Image 1 (cartoon, rainbow, N blue to C red):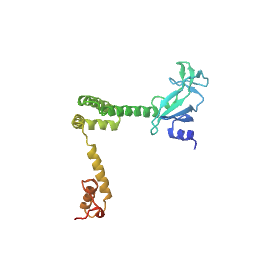
Image 2 (tube, rainbow, N blue to C red):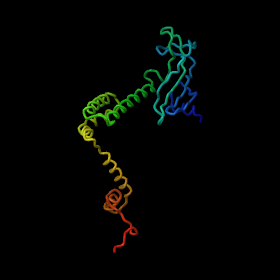
Image 3 (cartoon, rainbow, N blue to C red):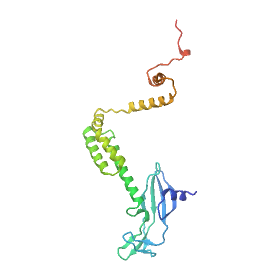
Image 4 (cartoon, helix red, strand yellow):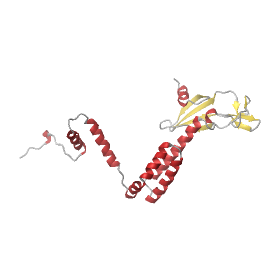
Length: 223
């Protein structure tokens, strides 16, 4: 399968053909063309085969990221002379108001800005008062976003606000404990089938505890 055909199936956007895919260090640029021959006014239903001219600059849309690459759509759009609205750039099916692409892009952008705002709060260079103020602003925005994961996150942050601010004030967190718990769970999973809990506990202490295990051949002979 050609790369253009693969991206056409991957994007699944109505009314377009993919004519070129360019891979850049931090982005993938996908050039598309509209399949329809008639030009449609974006303000009304007027359509025509007559082209006023071609827009000198390619139109661009940000799509959902493709792994570590930014995915960008590009198209050289035509312009038409509408009897009612004058010269307009032709309507693009997937970019019209209310389209699935538009809704998805707006949702992604809201989620991205919320995520970046929260990351800045915990960058490590803010005091307790600044963190409290920014967290309250974040929770307010997240609660109004309509994005269920962020609405739930805002509720969780507000429930644990005192503990979060204490961690910021003291400069400590439970990362070491969480890491230790994860290793214990892994050891317990490996110990499945042992005859008693003592065997699992012994393996945990042997792996994580302060036990110096000396093999017989490493022991020094007593004088």
